[in-house]
Length: 127
Image (cartoon, rainbow, N blue to C red; front, side):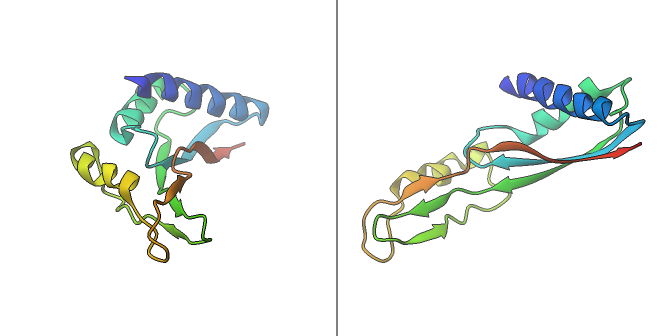
């Protein structure tokens, strides 16, 4: 369960930034998670909730924005792969279809770009 180690890094970063800014509370955290990270958002949120107990981040709302990879072709074509926001592990077949996506312009295989992000976008704190 790598979500726990990811949650630990996120939590430590959030607390360090809150301490640097002499925050009295962390109100919310916004994360950007790529569709190809294989992070289970429910497990990540659970771990963050457990880690934040008895800290200034206890009860902070965690927002998650999912990022789909883009398909790029050497002919210059580039477009969002269009994976729905509710795709999950049970949809592995649809996720495997990424590897077989072809360019609608020239028919060559698309190269996937992005979708591996796990970024803390914003931290809302009270000072």
